[in-house]
Image 1 (cartoon, rainbow, N blue to C red):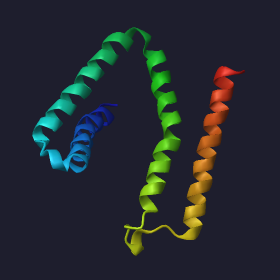
Image 2: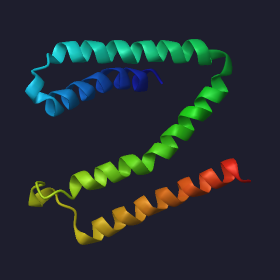
Image 3: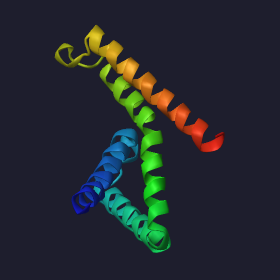
Length: 123
């Protein structure tokens, strides 16, 4: 648990910094300021979650597990889109078989999410 927390606390500000440096390269942002702001935000949000969710830790774990489960098709779609771009070198492009397999896996994630919603709200 500690290593996961440490990884997220380090990776999230770095990703946010790179995102803003790529997206807003015309604005000449200072990467260190973005990193520090992102680090402070994740720290404050984490402290808030621990403070308000510590007495209902089981509920918090259930919420986080559900959120990660529901986010998986979106993240899979982003990943699929990334590897099917024209700019990807030929050595990294997906074969037709792997592309079909990826789409089948993506479809199964979406179906599992639909079933989850069905059982969560209608059964």
